[in-house]
Amino acid sequence: LAAAFANGMEWFNTFGGNPVSCAAGMAVLDVIEAEGLTANALDTGAYLTGRLRALAAEHEAVGDVRGPGLYVGVDLVTDRSTKAPATALAADVANHARDHGVLVSTDGPADNVLKIKPPIVFGRDHADLLCDTLHDALTRCATR
Image (cartoon, rainbow, N blue to C red; front, side, top):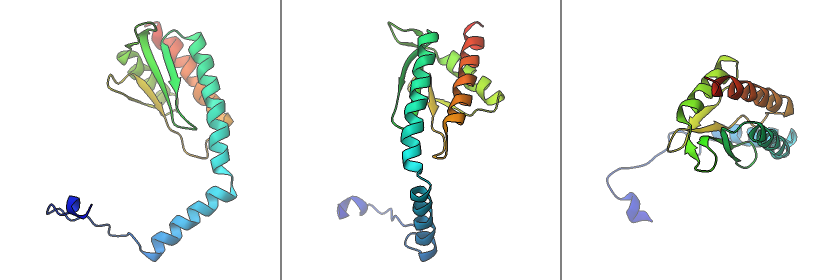
C-alpha cells in the first residue's frame, strides 16, 4: 500500500484531524441520530420509489426506477423493450422540473437517467412535490 503512494504525488488534507473539524463532524452525527434522519431516509426513500414506480405505470418513457433510500435513478427510454435511451426527453424533463422549482440532474452513459439525490431531511411532502412535478414534466415533454 505504501508503494502506491510513493509516486512523487504527496497526498495531504489541510483540515484532517483538526479538533474543530472533528467536533463539527461529531455534531452532525449527533443531529442525524437525534432527528432520526437515517430512518427518515429509509422510509421516505421507500415512499418515493413507490411513487416513481406508479409514474412508470403511467408513462411509457419510464424504463426503470432503481436505487436505495433517497438515491434514485429513473431511466427514460424511447422504447421499453429495447431500453433505447431518451436523452433529449431526459434533458427536457430535468429543465421543466428546474423551471418549476425541483432540481434533478441527468446522468448515465447516454445521459438519460434522472438522478434524484435529495438531502437527508427530504420528507414525504417533498417526495409528493417531486413526483407531481415529474408527472407534469413527463406529460408535457413527451408530447413535444
